[in-house]
Length: 131
Image (cartoon, rainbow, N blue to C red):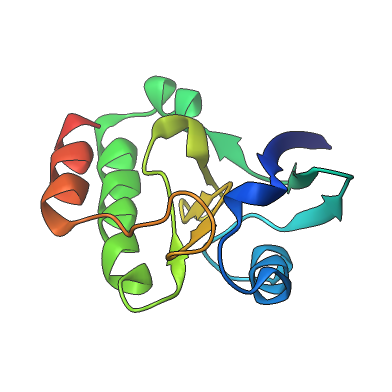
């Protein structure tokens, strides 16, 4: 089992901290399950990467499989556009399950936890094209 740890300063959390902590630790089908621990002045998010593979695995796939993954990625924006969650749309924040469904490793919360603002459609499309 592989885990990735992200640390945030407590002062980076704006607004109601308890709500933010609950949302960060909640389960969501588009995010990797994670645990939240609070130290004195920081938050430690630990994401468990079980039964998933990262972006580098796509390099060895045939073109049709790569396109399947990109098509699934293209649906992320619509699925998260009306939610409180924000995310960094980068290869190092993405993993895929065995059905080629994307999962984001870390999340933010709009106006509370970085990234504070949701991704704009133009930025999402530009990043998707660069993939």
